[in-house]
Image (cartoon, rainbow, N blue to C red; front, side):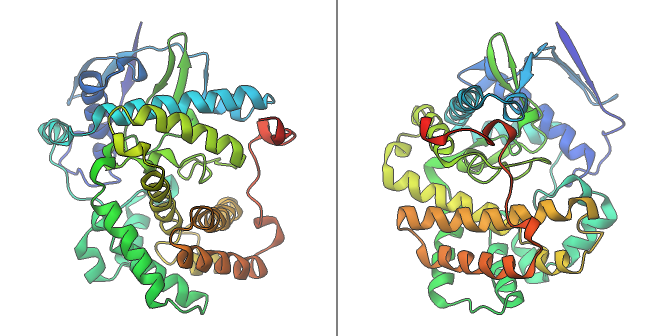
Length: 372
């Protein structure tokens, strides 16, 4: 069976994120690249044909019976747990099979359309050109010039957030963050092709297993940016919610097992634990960029629609606490973790009570976690 993914005119010269053209060519490149390079071609739909004008992708019609969210939003905790394990194992295979092949992907992507360096992922309501440009213009020139992929924006964002909450950003904290920045800008063995948005609706299940779709945000990055999605509340998902810690750990173990085929370093407990902390720090500070805490306080409609206000606050508090938790558990970058725990405590006093708890996915709301 064939499925057609049709786009409006997306073939113009603008290829800067978040322009539709940028996402179209990324999706095209990701599908074509993975079909050729992935060790398990069944984890993505087959791409039969594609063209620039009209902007069109002709791919396998999967006829899926469900997606990951079907189980997370359901009532069966065990089924949701098993599906998350399947997600983790498939993601690990995707990453493992693309390690060391960045040049091949870059060549393919550039052949479709030149890429203009982009800043970062933003939620859909911030992608309108006027809103996105306003947000980008709030970044100091010296930070913007360094580029998003240098990750130096993380230091500026941390200092800004500390200032908002009247907290000191000590030398020790900045030293720990510098270690994170170094690891993310130079991932070494963890550099892999990442989906960039492996949310529930982008993970389809058919008779052959789990397949990833929509590679609009696909790129080479630190592999664990994708892998910590369950731990960090599925950070790019419009309805991202909590997964129990025990389920998170099982999912990450399935991911790690398949990742080691292409990244033997992932078998090292210390290296993998540190990589988890690095990725969690990224998602935590990403939620703070563009002076988020101040914009949420003044209910800036250009930053976040009123009906999304509580959700963003819940995610910020949740990420702060999850980062504090994993730094304490691993004994790694604990000063940084302690800072975010303090930030969470302060914000819980400032923000309404209903923002304090990110809810669990429905499948886990009434489950006896001790049975996992």
